[in-house]
Image (cartoon, rainbow, N blue to C red):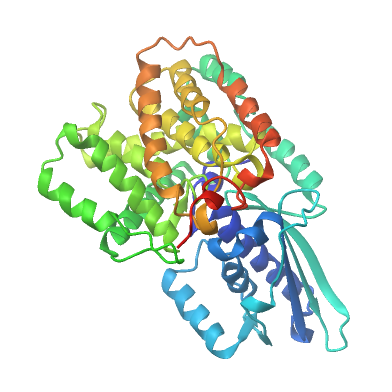
Length: 465
């Protein structure tokens, strides 16, 4: 299917879209496959192999537990944090999983095979699952790749998916693959980025469902902030990173009870930090477009609806409309990154996660602030241009340091990029398409040490404990 706004903004659990959401989705798909093949009741044993980046940082990213939950049939969009805790506790106590919710097997975290030095040809985030009968004969096996943002590709189906993408693109009334094509459509049809995106979305679902779905996305983002602000202590994982959201929230409410414009930066920082602390806690968040970058778009959206002339002092209905347009415009830019380059930190480094999110957020903000298509494209370009080369080097393989603060910094970059673009007339030397291709090429040239393996950068130069 052609990439849509609800592919780029999906509800899931932390801490990683490529290492938690993707593997859970793949394992759940495998569970469906063996049910459909009518072999689930004959399964006597199971084997899971994680390759490359999934194996290298799997413990810190929750890959192993996510895989077990997926094998039980849980989907990342539907599972609740309390269900996660309940099932993981039961697995730890019994040493068993309920395969596809039907067949109990003795299997646990220690049984998953980690192969960090083995990179499968299609993508560094590879996983293979196989089930066997009592005689050891293979009943079913599949290999999947978690390619970023929670997207998965099954081995042998990549070409078919690309062909389906081309076909579904042709079904859209206003298809685009590049920013140049998007700008041409905007001029020809007299539409904004958001207008073009919703025109393509309504072939899948009615417009009222698109709008309701985007407002639900907004609500889940806000819920993540509220939940994070109630948690205290340190983040899980062993780094003993102190939670800052509760203290920041309390201080802001004391120093800025009336939401004065002079405090906008502090509130933006708070929202970004809060969302990413919730993500690091394995909480429910919105993949936007990845979990590691999940705090950027909520933070910039907070700025848009609370501190811009387009929204400040307006009714809730007007703010809702601005939210929908923000997310649609951001989604349009996200399509460009997903289709032309990558949003996978394991493939192109953090420029593909934080950089893409910052670029998308800048476009969304420029849309809300009344930018022309050229200004919106310029805002997205500026934001990514100044995230080029950003490495993914999480300490301890955890989505905490430098990930959490990096979201706040990238949110500020997005806001500044939108403001800079709106002070211009839309003309600029470097196009968004050129910067997207540059990001892709930079990712290909980047050493694997700096692509979500925890084998370079801060991950090896900072003592974990």
